[in-house]
Structures are given as structure tokens and as C-alpha cells.
Image (tube, rainbow, N blue to C red; front, top):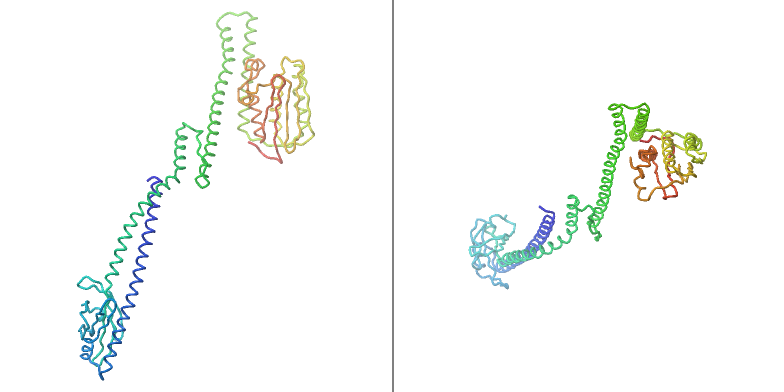
Length: 475
């Protein structure tokens, strides 16, 4: 059963049961109150009869059953309902005397009472009327008798039956009206759930991940709508990330296949030439040079890939390292290559102790400076600045150059594996597009960030910043 109908039926059932129980209890309470009044009037009439009989009996020196029977014939108590019917009988059920036709024939009440006990009960006569029947004891010389009287309460029971019937009809009408109101109320209350359900189905079908629901309610359903929208935003973001990851994976595979295809084609081609036709010593030397260079290119590619895989899988231990001596050592290792390329390298480092994995950060610095060297190719006034310092609570390593720069639309992808802004120039300079991907992973290992600022024609600045207090391991 749908939630709408569960909610609707539950509310109608609860309302109907509550009103019904309350109404019937009220009718029964009114009936009991009226019945108690009739019982009180019944006993009052019985007392009046006892008083009248006692007044008559006072004229006799001794009261016997026969005398009581004679007295009963002369007594009549009148009320608004007419003469009160009564009789005098013994406990065996024998009538000694009565004042008028007594409508109740049963003697069960008298037989159930003790000699000095009075009581009452409800009796149904042959004429279909319902009577209150009371009996009280009377002492005589011949033994104990009971004075019985009755009071017609048929109208009281009829009134209750009519009230039951009227209330039943009223309840049927109320349930119909209440059902219509609850139906409308339920539809209004559950409308946000229908919107949520429709939006969820669209998201599940993948046709509208960007779907959102209104947040115009200030109740639990409004909070649920807000939570749904938050979930939808997170899901949309994650799906976009998955798409980006899938695209990067496809680009990685395509780039990897392309990167190894070119050198393998050259190696196989020149080797086939050497095998299939006679070559001169000069040609052999040229062909072997091509094979050697392409083999070295494959070696560099495999080494870069290996570094990237090892960095992802291995656990590293951080140690305190002096920033100034560390960067001075890195600059010294790069100095011959940069001097040969007529590029100036400036190292600036503060004498501070930094928690780092020195081998990883050295690899990162070498890759960043090498990228800067490639950006400065064919420039006469090439300059690279390698800095290390503390900025508030962060440790920072920055590599900046005055090279050709990176176009803004390329900045978000330069850290992807095999991605190269200028593929032909990068391959000519021995690049494979893995350096910045490796640097990004090293920054992640240190719990830091790698950011790139660049302007075409003015240069690039790569900043790595991280925090670290105490010796810890990073994955």
C-alpha cells in the first residue's frame, strides 16, 4: 500500500474511532445518569408506599398477612406517571396483596434478597416494556414480606437506541466529510514527497542529474528537500569527477600508447632497414644513433612511469631537513645543465628546519626546474628562481621563470599524466608529460597543495605549500 493511502486510512480510522468511542461513551454516561435518577425515584416511591402502609397498619394492634393484603387494596400513590404499581409478597413468590395490576410477573428479585435486604433490578414485561423493579422487606407477625414496586423506563432505553442510531448516521456523515478533508490535507502534505520521488526516479534513470526540488517549506519535509538537494549536488559533483577521471584514464591510455608507438616505430623501422638491405658504415652509424636515442626515450618514459607508480604505492617517513642546505644541494645538481643552456638559476632559502621527505621533494624540485628550463629554450635572458621559506604556518617551495608561460585554458590539465601543452616541442626536448603529475602526487604525500600561476609571454610560477609538525608517515 502506498504511503498516501496508509496516511489517509490511518487518519480517517483514528478520527472515526476516537469520535465513535467518545460519542458512545457520552451517550452511555447520559443513560447511566438518567437510570440512576430513575432508581432514586423508584426507591422514593417505595418509601412513600412503606409510609402509607405503615400509617394504615398503625390502626391494627397486630399486623398479619391478611391485614396487609386488605391495607394494600386501599392504598394508591399518584405521581406524574399515574398510580404507582406495587405488590406485597413473600419470599416464596406468593402475592399477599397489590394496589393495581403489577406488570412484572417474575419473582426472581424477591427470591434473591435476604430477609432484611432491599434491592432492584431491570425486568422486561410481556408487553415489551422495560421496568425498574424494587423490593424492600416488611416485618409482620406471620413472617417477613417484601414490598415491591416498579417504574417504567422503556422510554429511557428507546431514547438511548435513538441516540445510538442518530449518532451512527452522524458519524457516517462526519467520516465522509472528514475523509474528504483528510484526503486534501494528505495530498498537500505529501506533495513534496511526490516531487522528491519524481526527482529521485529521474536521477536513478540518469536523465536529469541536475534536477532539484523546491525548498519552500519550514518543516521536516522542507529539511528533507534541502538534504535531497545537497545530496544531488554532491552526486552531480561526484559524477562529474568520475567523468573527469574516466576521461583522464582514457587520455592516459591513449597518450601512453602514442608515446611508445613513435619510438618503437622508429626502432623497428631502422632495425628492419639494417636487416633487409645492405647499408654503409655511415648509414649504420646513423641508424644506430636513431635506435639509441629512441631507446633512451623509452627508458626515460618507463622511469617516469615507475616513479609515479612507486610514489603512489610506497609509505614515506618525514624527517627534519634544513631548507637552505637542501635547496642549495638541489641547485648545485642542476647548475651544469642550466649553465650549458645559458640559464641563470637563483636559489633563495631561509635557514629553517622543515619536516619533509627529502628524496621526494628533491625529485619534485628537479622536475619543476627542468620544466622551467624547457620553457626558457631559445631565450637569451632565461632566469629561474628557486625559493624556500616559511609563510605563517606553511612551508613553501616556489619555482618561477620568465619563460613562454601556459595558456589559461591549459592550467587545469597540466598535472594530468602525459598531458603536454606543446606536444611537439616537449617531445623534442625529451619530455613525456609526467613531471607535473609526479610533482602533484609528491605534494599530496606531504599533505600539501600545488598551485600554478602563469601568463603567456611572461612566465610561470609553481608553488608547493604544506604543513607539518613532528615526525609522521605519509602514504
